[in-house]
Image (cartoon, rainbow, N blue to C red; front, side):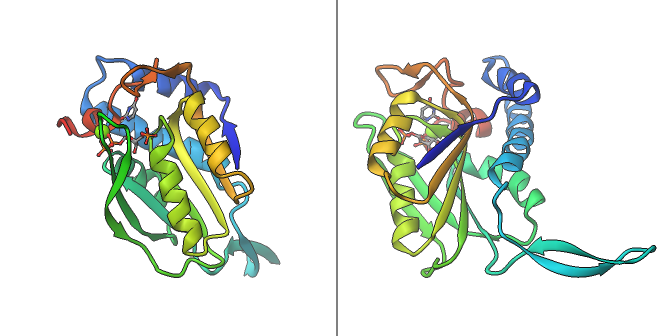
Length: 211
Ligand SMILES: O=P(O)(O)OC[C@H]1O[C@H](OP(=O)(O)OP(=O)(O)O)[C@H](O)[C@@H]1O
Ligand SMILES: O=c1cc[nH]c(=O)[nH]1
Ligand SMILES: [Mg+2]
């Protein structure tokens, strides 16, 4: 398992506005969308391509296109859904699967309430979208499920990560083909399992509801 924190002034600028408690839901959704595009640029650095012949108005040459099997993008509902549009804009040929997961706010244990993904993921590159890596419980469970189905290259794109969750992932996913790309590794988790300084509850801020 590898972790990569993207160090870029545009990412830091957008993230600061996203964190601000005064940022309303429409602006939060727009910023999350813009941030995923910037993070995806880094996260797709190793996306598999194949060579194609093309002809420009000037000459014949070779180019590349995304190769088969197509990459799979998996947003983790709810909050990950706010990152889907930005991701498929960059990877328009990707297939999309869905995982619905919820963290019990008392025990901080993650459970899965929806699962709609191809059974066989052998040879597939998978991009998992979830804005928050807090204790890591949600992403670890998602990664185990994807690897069990045969995925051989999984990259999670998170807006924020807590050092506790990163350490837990490194321990639980040692030796697996998993990469995490994030805009920031924050200071810590608080006693309620929230990332500090963080941005609060990503799902609630995105959709304006409590849950
Ligand atoms: O690393 P963890 O400690 O597991 O926490 C992270 C998870 O918590 C949030 O989801 P939440 O359970 O609030 O669901 P929601 O997206 O529907 O709001 C967040 O979107 C992550 O999926
Ligand atoms: O800070 C946190 C932790 C988990 N989930 C969130 O939405 N925010
Ligand atoms: Mg939530």
